Length: 137
Image (tube, rainbow, N blue to C red; front, side):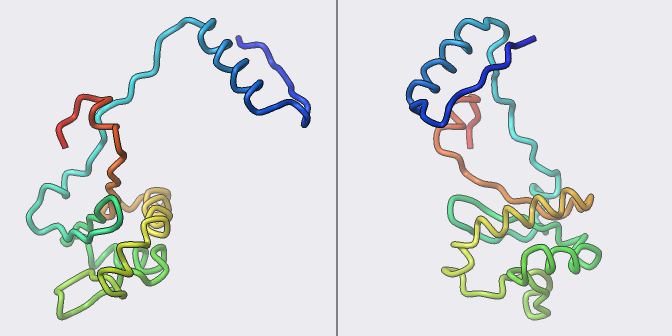
């Protein structure tokens, strides 16, 4: 078990960070290693809908769209809606404006997961992560 430590409001962040680094270095144990990302199977399906966002992509399982539409429309705050002309999900904003809504879509991804909805996935590119896990993106 790890010791419990406290700090004062007047302690400098650099001092706290330095002490934390010492604790981590002295703890030994197994070093954390990131795992390969878990990507839903529907992402590889040609019928999946892909919408571009800043540093990533939103994937929607078009086959599940009729069932997941109400939740996705609600949790995305109306950013993703049904467009008969698009034969399924589409952004309610211009491509440029939609691309800046990555934070809102991350919240939608979390809410959908919490609700057990598997047909929505936000894939974000994290600089340096592929090199760290040895993944070819």
